[in-house]
Length: 160
Image 1 (tube, rainbow, N blue to C red):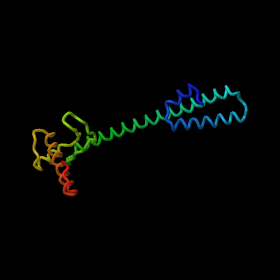
Image 2 (cartoon, rainbow, N blue to C red):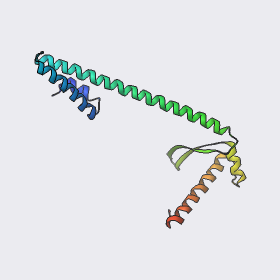
Image 3 (cartoon, rainbow, N blue to C red):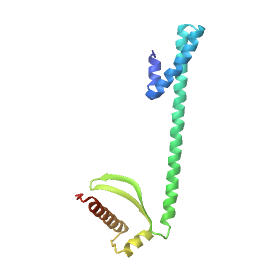
Image 4 (cartoon, one colour):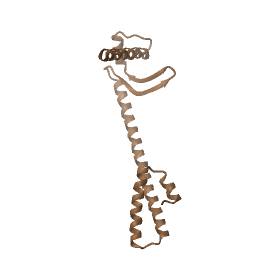
C-alpha cells in the first residue's frame, strides 16, 4: 500500500502510468524481499525512491513530448505563414478557410485568407462591393446558397 508521499507522487501521472509504476516497483520489491537482503523499513524506503525515480522519468518524458509538440506546431505555423505569403503574391485566384469559426454577437464568424487575384476574379464574375470583405461575403453567401440548393435537390428537404 502506498504511503502519503507515494500518493502525492502518483497523483501527477495518469492511472495507466500509475499501474505501470506500481508493477515496476512491485517487481523490485519482490526481488528484494526474495533475497532477504534488506529489512522491511529499508525496503519501503527503496520502494519510495524507485517510485519517485520512475515518476520523475515519466514527467521528463511528458515534458519532452510537450516541447516536441510545441516545436512542431510552431514549425507548422511558420510553414503556413510562408504558404499564405506565397499564395497572396500569386497571380492565380486563391482563397483559403483559415479553419477557425468563432461565435460573435452577430452569429458565426469564419476567417478566410485571399489574394488580389481572387478579388479580381470575383469582380469579373459580377460580384461588387465597396470593400474586398463585402465581395468575399457575397461569394460565401452565394456558395452557401448553392450548397443548400444542391442538398435540397439531392435529399428533397428544406434546410430552413
